[in-house]
Image 1 (tube, rainbow, N blue to C red):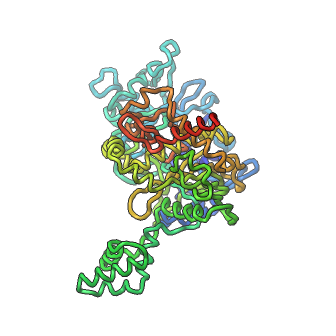
Image 2: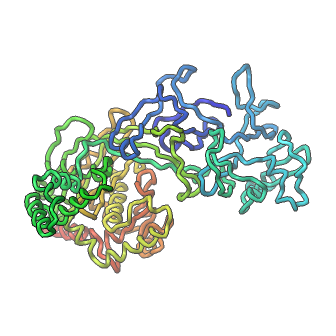
Image 3: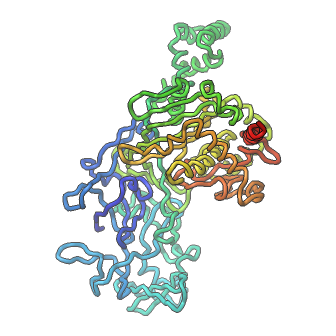
Length: 608
């Protein structure tokens, strides 16, 4: 298949035009091959140990860039033309080949010189995430099946096809047809989208991507015809990590301290259970933990099937530990590098606590942060279809497209004791169970965070804050992203949200967001954001409507109040509920009393 070059922005190599995506450039339709086709000599390696370990010790590569006009010697990546079938805008002749002029490939018809337009429909299998050209000669001559008197199975001419447009028939598919000038057979594209149309006409999945020469697997899923530019043709799966000094989560730090205790070695050699419990209590007393935690570590040590320690630390757990260290230190951060946070814990910023009713225990201005985003793979047609890896090569080590970005943000830490007491309420658990039931019934939902009450509440607060920050920060709402830290299990409890923006330039962003992180500016924005969520233009339907939207993985949430750009949300606008934040008829909201306290404080100020 023909290989050509074109220009894209660097960030687009990861999304939305990453490996497997169809890209339109100057009237040409192209698809990006996997990284096994990349020349690693021209691609720059991106270093982020935390993300590389999470992806299985993978290597991360950034696409080559150039500042001047592209030429023959410019470093580049290869793209494949897809679909191969096109039609001429002048003579309507359909062809799979590109013309040549003086040895150079040109996108022109060999017969009349008209520009070639990509066919509007391609074939995607329903579960294997494969995509291919529709066999137009077979489809045109087959008709609706062998029993169709209008079919022409005896004709298989692929050079006499024409793409006809009947302007009198309107703008629908019924106005478009493919005609064979050899046998006079014509068929409307309206037949193409009927259920089972391609299978009935004898077409099966090839089990490969357009740039692969041979099928790597047998695919038994049925094909379906879809528009070439349909959104569902490409669903990228990205993984991102903040490049921060790795800090051990509390659970791993406690485990290491238990193992290093001078009495720990005695636990695995004592046959008397009573003495084991006694020594465990000594260790627990010295380290400020529980005997159960000590015995659990001892059991892991005795079990030969348990690994010494997982090399990969959960990305968010390590990030939360790093934020905790910065927040507990407090004040201006004079550190050098790519993770700089000025913080105001509650004990040093008590002036804002009454306005937040004590729910916010710390505010951080993230003056600089480095983020690395990698494309792990993609799916087609359905969210529960097979994941196609971004590296389809045969090498054991995987190489993934990646990009590094530098930016700024605002961090909010919430009071753990208040949050834990709230999520233990029966009415709160009952409300969250509605989402849990739908979560368990949705096959692909396991790739999202579990809809625990604290996650749904903090996630909704982050959306409200992003919408409000967009008014004052100078950044578009689509450029502000979120990162939710909401773990309520075990030792590594977390309760915070990071709202940040990042750019591909080495200098990062301009400070419009971090400026709003000072408590005197952020707290009024926080209260205003809650006020925005208290009323929605779609109320009472939005607040009371339990079925929600987007595969039923939302409750009280809509575009009028909470939803933001999907590129800004780590859960693609799912797992949101205003009632868990601001309360409802049958549930107590996490921040239900914040607006009441604010209104009371404002009234007292007016009276004075």
